[in-house]
Length: 237
Image (cartoon, rainbow, N blue to C red; front, side, top):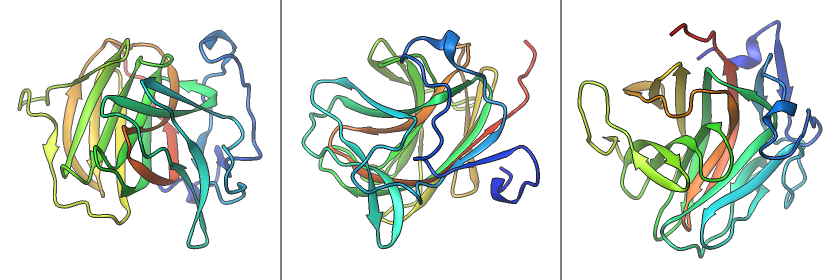
């Protein structure tokens, strides 16, 4: 993925709190513009304890969610802080400024704590609470798994050429920063961790453009930073 901060044209650097764009109702996609500029969310200008302007938090399951900006040793990050949710509970925060179909996304994430789950992931083609794709990295299990969530039910997807494996095991993730990336082109999703390609998945249940965002499960307290979103050319079917 290109380092977006070095692009000379078509870059919109968003600090996360000062750039509200075309915000509509959660499910009113007719009012959302299609993404036209590459975007980096850094949260540097955000007030700790607040949700960045232009974002909205949601959850699937029983419990609650609590997203806010945190100060991590002088660096501002977006964090999911609810730490007492049951196991089958998904925390979601999405950017309401645009929708996009084919996209190259990456984020730095750091698992802080969680007994049921840790880590987190990337959401794309978000159609509302309980309907989206997500890929996540979990330091408790040291694996990276891609799912579809349909009407609140999460299903891991088979890997191309490998079948149903429950994602892929990876080297220990620890409690430091890791970079998770997914490239979405049509019905093919390519997953990367710390610059290394892991696998591809094929699925077509959500074919239209949707919102993008971040995700954790259950009681995972996780920090996110440098959320980069780059629109890629849609592939023909």
